[in-house]
Image: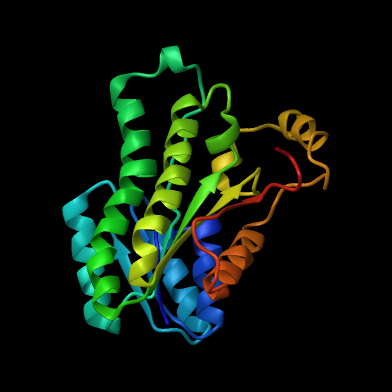
Length: 239
């Protein structure tokens, strides 16, 4: 199986890439902000015995995304699973955001998912099979103060997931999403110990989630052949 993972330089995306590499699958990994970290992730995957194709590009650039999908299909012959993980956050009052900031969040978090799905789709349709798994957030359903645009993009991802599942099911392509709670990644480094402690009191399991736990959920969905159109929540019971 060939897996394409965006935002794979670190955190959840890197954990997903390593999870599938350890299982012996071909892995194409995309990163757009830290090439050195992407190369490190590729080396880790190779050390697990996987064939790896690292691709440095911005998922907000549709032309670049199409080129990445073409390179992946050329290298491995197909794309069985697209994992849309790349995302950025802006924490602050909505009234303080400028146009550049909110457009960038939308371009990466929502348009990036649309770009990758659209570019991968012809490759999947040619084989009559495939999967798309989108990494979303509990804020896509609940909404978060001081993360209004981020929340809006994740709500869009959830709805896109359900809509594409209905549209693509007859073509043998499944589409699902994993909505993450508070996961121990660099994206949440802006929170101090007191803020994390306060959040943990509201999480029944009393701890942060781990990137490998999200990876395991993605692996489960990849093998669950009768599940499509679902947004599965992994948040320790938080929301």
